[in-house]
Figure 1 (cartoon, rainbow, N blue to C red):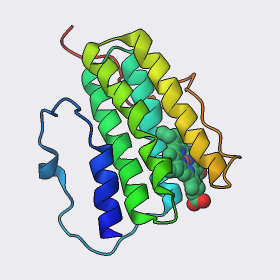
Figure 2 (spheres, rainbow, N blue to C red):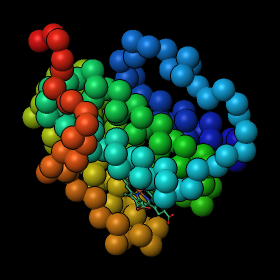
Figure 3 (tube, protein in one colour):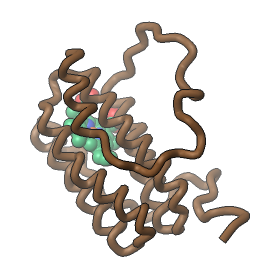
Length: 156
Ligand code: HEC
């Protein structure tokens, strides 16, 4: 399981632009045995998927970069904590994740939209292959988080 985790982590490492705040400052204080349920990890991934989309759509590339990292972290967590998930189901997500990272870096809204579509197909491919074909994701049409601003604030 340790080895598997490292293997997946290695494959999932993409050259995302560095975050302004070091993530290590935000690590949990303890490392106790709380193991999130897979459905809960997926629910978090679902939020990141929505927020990623609306950040990119609002040309808020900094936020999009952040949400993509969170989404990637969720996929990694799922793969490491749930050995029943086939490794290849996770590693095939590397390509669309990297494609999105590239479009964020290039600030290319058109290619961003296409890449998020491909990522979404990857979500569904895994759901189908794991007997969860009834969980169908799509690129979001409405922003459900009315308590968060997606356009960049204060600078343009
Ligand atoms: C490697 C496989 C895999 C990938 C990739 C994957 N999922 Fe999942 N997802 C699952 C499995 C397995 C479940 C069912 C979990 C369970 O039965 O407890 C699930 C469940 C879900 C659920 C239902 C959660 C709930 O309890 O209501 C959502 C929403 C979801 N995934 C979203 C996504 C999104 C969005 C992506 C892509 C960004 C994604 N998933 C990618 C395997 C995957």
